[in-house]
Length: 636
Image 1 (cartoon, rainbow, N blue to C red):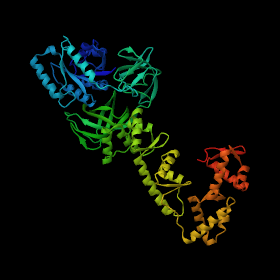
Image 2 (cartoon, helix red, strand yellow; image 1 turned 30 degrees about the vertical axis):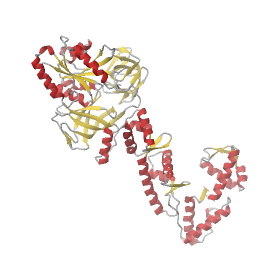
Image 3 (spheres, one colour; image 1 turned 90 degrees about the vertical axis):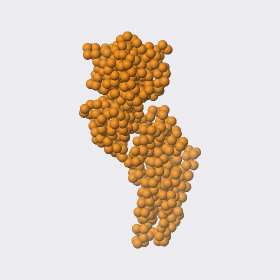
Image 4 (cartoon, rainbow, N blue to C red; image 1 turned 180 degrees about the vertical axis):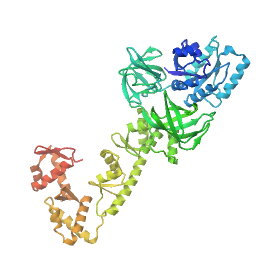
């Protein structure tokens, strides 16, 4: 069943509450002060049943300027608007202001209701209709139905009811599969039920027993009881006025303006990037740095506006802006808000949130403006692609959900599309990276290694740990290694052992260095496993070649020609690879190996066999258990 909220709006004392009572039989003035003064102060709630069995919720909001905050609190979940104009007074200041507010909140359909029909003549009524036509030109109510009624006599009530029933069929149905969200507009204790909150469920569905997260505090509470239109219900759906009893919540732990959500659904922002729009008839101007009242859901707070693509905006104009907030705001991309001038207090415009987690720095460059445009007009996939690039790092599905304000289903769909289009790459498990970010890392890596090779021409490459620290310090070791392996697979770099180099890099020796290199190669090759120590190798060269010996020996180690088992034991690559193959073959047939078995396998002394085994332990290929070694992570 479709759940729709109809909201009233209009000038004070134009008969909104009387109209709702005539439609529903429910008096929405529930406070003694409201009844005494004849003015609605708090939003009132009723429901309207139609002949076909459908039902709509009705919110009767205050009309007096002093109570505009309550009007905004009630109108956030409205699907259809009834703009009320009294026949005897016509269009008044709050009529215009309320219409502007409804427009800024993104309401797309409604009806104009002329009340107090019994108090005017037909000629006067036609003048009022002309004023209404002028007022609604260019708004969502332009050319929409105008129904004249008298709540006192009942004239026109049936026509209005049929008009609303017809509009119900074309109202956009809310997605009840999303995580739930309910802006809290009332809080009160009830004996036997604990703390009760009310509001319009604007997204998803909520069940008795669900855990609700109260934002911005983050406190959690189980849902004890749910009422919809005054009746107990196991579930409430988006589009329904709902009262929820929260277990274990004390007075003061939840307040009007808070938001009830599913866990982790909302970002709590101290700044938001937005599209600001000024009302077409306001006489105010927003300048860069202006302070404003911001109304979002049932929450009101001060905000400072930093305009992006203009220095100031006037009536009917729009621009992108960063709003820095005086207190935290639970919100998400796509939310609508209203802004009022600080002094004097009057509604001047509103807008839509484009980013609930903007970066710290405000940028006014063309790429920044393009990012604003994508956030405003782009598809979920385009926004996800933008986020993946803007984050500039490895990201998870949860990162993308949070920064793009997407639910899990939409986020998964966006990731699948971006993987197919190769705009993002999967690194490991559920980690991803933007292809453009990887390209930028590749460029930085090429420059970094180029400088390194120029400074260290005899080294086979930069040690992997050093590369990670200089290039990928903000990533975990696992993520950094995944990025490095991707760069290797894309032939941006080459990996030799623990060293990283550019693919076309090779060590070039002078004639003297070539002779030293050849002698060292020969010594290590002849020695096999029973090698000389570095000091013994150094003693093979005259004093004037000692420095070059050290450089070339280090070069052979960094390039992988020589493998260090310990500080005193170095094998040639051929000897090392032969030994590894023997150990692998042993483990193909056996679950463990002893030191004596390794010694016999290699045909060498205990000293060199022990050095190899401890080397493999250090690489987590094997692990020592008692007197034997078993495979740990293995040779892969």
